[in-house]
Each structure stands twice: as structure tokens, then as C-alpha cells.
Image (cartoon, rainbow, N blue to C red; front, side, top):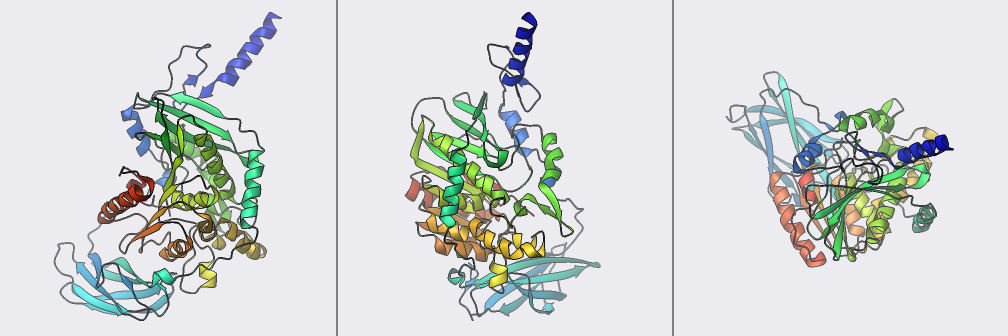
Length: 492
């Protein structure tokens, strides 16, 4: 009998134990007196800057090269169709002297189809090039300059009545019925909620690692912080950009706010960075001889596509947050950039509890643009380029409609602030315009011609000011410490 009790006690200890990021074992206080997890400001900063190899940009030696910059005769680089856009090209040698000589240029549409290519004479470091488009959309001018046998390039993008761009995506009759059924399926699954409190940087805040049961046997993980003082606090959920994983999920904290930072993947978010390095191969497949990442998995099957479980995980996360005793459910905000921006728009179309959203360079916008509207590029992640077999293609086209913000946008009730760069070749600006046109709630779109997937320093300042004004008007919040600090997360 004594041996049985000892075995049961050991089993109980194993069940109660939870492995933390640093290998400590966190048990119930009745079983052990080990300290709680503690993350101070120094450790918080270290965790925020750690990254896996999948998330790092390739570093190359910087060799002397000319600097190529652009300007337009219109500050916003937006023109009427048929109107000439004037690209002013300025080139400086590495010693800052004006560059002179012939450069190669290439004029393309948004989808990189060449429209014209010749040489351009640069005199005293400057030249002008004029071009137009007779249809709503974007054109790009690429300039290549030679220096000591090496080439360097840059490009600029002009828009032509982009507000007239229409969505190429179809709207399935059962779009919302499909998602309502998915949510009902999730609701029928026991939540199996795990919560582990830890000591964070601010002693006045409560911090928790939280995970729950999602569909298809997956779990969903997030961090939640909130003031310890009882009250009613707004809810702010930030959705991350793509990756496996660039960094630890941030430890969130904001005054008078229940803050949520999360992972879209089925693995804990409180592990050492080395753990994520080992997981990276699980989120890639070889498809048609090409290495393809998770965002394109199973696009031919609407029941299996990767982002289905992600969206349902976000939905259930909001269920948990809204059930908090201190939650003010009338003040629910969601934000994100790139993958986070696209998922923010999507969940706002599904969950009417959301009262305000801010996004930048959003993905999942008009997947079928390239095959239905010549001159346009499909929205990231270009899933139709990664269909596993030719016979799956037609079905994949149909499935994209259930995961396209052109359709989620129709159901958004919350005010929406969006920022987009014209030079973004990860998230094409035409898709953002197509989605923006379908949003019927209060909305604002800030665009900047020289920003790519991530904004120029001046654009970051302008976005902070414009979004703060919009947020104050529609959400009553003046805090400027928001999503824009991360840029577009530089997905490739």
C-alpha cells in the first residue's frame, strides 16, 4: 500500500510540474518551495532581441557602391490614369560626388512584368524619367548603376488611381456559414486551459503564460498581463509577423490594459531560443522542388489550410480575455503588421466584439489578383504558386476565397487604420487598396511611396501621429506606444 502511495505521489508531481524557459520546474507551492519564474527588465530586453536563424537577415560585406534615390513631382506619388508620373533619379558615387554615365532602367508593372527597358543618361548625378498607366494600379522603375565592375540597384513605385482597384476574389455563398461552423466545432472542444503566473518587470502587474486546446489536436499559446489593482481595463491583442520564431514573444505591459502577445504556432512560447531552432524544419516542406513555409501548407483543402487553426485560436483567445473579471469588453483592440496585420483584419471580420483595429502592410489580401487581373501581384503568401499538384489548382483557387481579407473585410464593424508602402514587394499595395475599398466601417489608409515591407523613419513618425489621432477619435485612446515600432517584420 505504501509503495502504491509513493508511486501515486510521484505521478502527481510529474503532472503538476511545468517546464519553464530556463529549465526550472514550477510546481504547486504545496509541493515545493522553488521560486516562481522571474523575468526582470534586463532579461526581458535580452529575450526580445534573441532570434532563430530563420528570422535573421543575411549579412553581406558592404562594398563601396553608388547611392540611388528617387523623388516624384507629386509627394504622394499618386496620379490619374493616363497622367505622366515624373521619376527624378539622383545618383551619388561612394565619395558623394555626382554620378555621370549611362544606367540601365527597367519599367515593370506591380507583378514584375517588364513594360520597357533601355539605358538612361545620368548627367551631374540626376535624370528624369516619365511613365504612365492607363489602368488603376502601380508601376515600378528600377535603376541599375555600375561602379568598379559591380552593379547596384534601387526602385520606386508610382500609383495610378489606386482607389479604383477592385477585388479579383470571389465571395462564396457559404463564406460566413463555413466560419460559423468552425467556431461551433471549436466551442464543442473542452478548453483544457493552463495558466502559469510569473513575475514580470512591473510588480504592479500580473503576468501569465496561458495555453488551451485548439482544433485538430493543436494547442494555442499566449502571454497576458494586466494591472493587479481591480478595475475595468481595455483589452489589447497584438498578432505577430510570420516566422518560426524570430524572437521570444514579447512580455506585454501597458497602463490600464489587459495586454496579449501570442504565437500562431503549436508550441510553447516560453522556451530557450535553441528550442525554436530545432523546430524550424517542421514548418517547411519541399513542394515542386521548392522549399515552402507553413503559410502555404494544404491550400487545396479549406479544412486543413494552416491559418484555419490560427484564426480559431485567436477567436478562443478573445473568449478567454473577455471573460477576465477586469475586462472592459467594450474596449477591445487588435493590431499587427504583415502576417499580424492580415490576421487582424480577418479576426475583426469574424468577431464583432472587436471595437478597433490597426494594421500595417496586411497579408492575405486578394490571393487571385495575378491570375484574374493582369498587371497586379497576388497577396502574400502567393499560395497559388505553391499548390502541391496541378490537379489541386482549381480547388486551391476556390479555397483562397475562405482565407482572403477581401471577404473578411465585408464583415468588419470596427474602425480600421491601415498603413502601406508602395515599394512593398512582400505585400503588394494593390491588394491593400482592394481590401480597403470593401471596408464599410470608419477607416483611414496612410500610404508612403518609398516604404517597403517596413517603413522609412519619416513614415514611422507620420504613422504614429496619424494613427494616434484616429485612435483618439474612434477608441478614445491617446497612447502612442503601438504596433508601428516593428515595421513589417521583414518577411521574405
